[in-house]
Length: 368
Ligand SMILES: C[S@@+](CC[C@H](N)C(=O)[O-])C[C@H]1O[C@@H](n2cnc3c(N)ncnc32)[C@H](O)[C@@H]1O
Image (tube, rainbow, N blue to C red; front, side):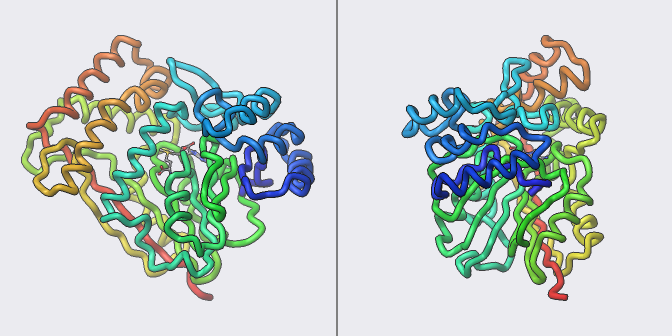
């Protein structure tokens, strides 16, 4: 995707090793920003796969191949950074302020289920049929679960590519799914445009959203669809039970300030419709879904979502605050611990009826 696509951690179990090695060698030569040991990468590509080389987060079925390949893989993408007791991405280190360790991966997988349930068990809302041989791109794929789920549900999709700064995707996935380590903020150099581009839950990640959306536009076929899924990161309650002094509000305010300071807004959702229209998309549609935190809703589906989001905040709060509150806002370890404890308690408080709005923006590139 970026120029050139960083094949260092391309994990396509189906690719044959020698053309793959040649491709990796060529790409490594052209890639100034990614160090690639093509021998090891080729071995790793076939035997272990993305996410396997971090000493425990990979697919255990590949344990032997994994450890052998990963110890010899001299790629910068695997030299993870550790700070505040958490592990962070290595490629383009420092760009993304949230961890990529096993605990975070479990959280992301749980949140995938939340979003799926939130959309009434749908992965996308764009009017597409991936089974008609569509080529799909998932921007900032994380653990790759959305892409894998799509590949499972739509075996007729020609290709589903997921890219991310972190090689934390499993190697065992549907045959039409593959993953790349890439920085979507660099210039894209896709060999072919996609039929559908999906981008979910990238708050706090991107410096220049209009530019990213223009690149998405330029890399869609005429008539192709874009889908952005993002929560509005200003919590509220309908009954006044969420007050300004609630630790959840203080945490979100702190995240807002920290992300503003580093120029990567934590609340892109409200501006997305405008950015999409400005890029030239048509048939723009914005759909809003409620995301409750807590088991308080009567509706069973919302209760399930709320229960999982309680876990998300209770277990995930450290991931949200560790780097941004310490390194950007300059809070002490003790101050962060007190806030984290407050957020845990707030998320579990059955009397506080916290809601977020989840936006799904679908938009089409004109046919001409
Ligand atoms: C909160 S996670 C969401 C993952 C996935 N989209 C999902 O919905 O489960 C955000 C992801 O964006 C990735 N990311 C952030 N900045 C990126 C960039 N410039 N290029 C590629 N991926 C990026 C992070 O590494 C992380 O995996």
